[in-house]
Image (cartoon, rainbow, N blue to C red; front, side, top):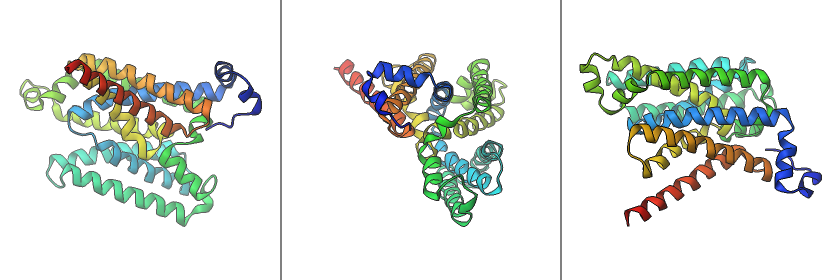
Length: 291
């Protein structure tokens, strides 16, 4: 969230936006936001169709706990959160496959446990944070000024990770389609469904860690799920849903970021509210077309 100066207030909204875009850190935030949203939207289609919608919620809390550990130990957040979240995604899938713990119960355990551990650590070692305890927690849970403090190295890391995720969806499109809709048939045809399920779980961990900077741990599920659900209101084929979801994810998040800049509202909450509005519009259009 940016402070709007009196000079900016005296300008029109277009001039104000041009003024903000002249700052490099604003451009970095928009680039990262667009890339993260694109990856989150594509992942959301697969997770919704596979009935894994709530996995984002559980893994986002794991990422919060991992970032709390990074803050306490003085390590870079991404170096801790990324491997821990990916490992948690894989372990969650393994536990569900082997019947050790049912998927919904495992996600509930992860959500409550990781959130509690993270908050406890930040309370026990408040002096290790970059600011106040409430500020650290709010920034991690709801997204905040972290999107506006990205360095060029952060943006490049985001570009590389997003390129890997997009490459996975493009190169493995037909295999992802097969595993998503009929895993038994895909296995019968010789496709290693288990490998692709693990790959999807790992990609989920990567996208969730990246998305924490944009919307925070508590709002990540909305960023992943809403664009996919919106496109499914009007489109039925897998390819069209994927394309429209990607467009809606980018358009919604970019609009939310720009509105956040212009009106100094919380970044994560603004992005999610824009996606909720888009979902409402598509739902109304579906009702109109049915009639």
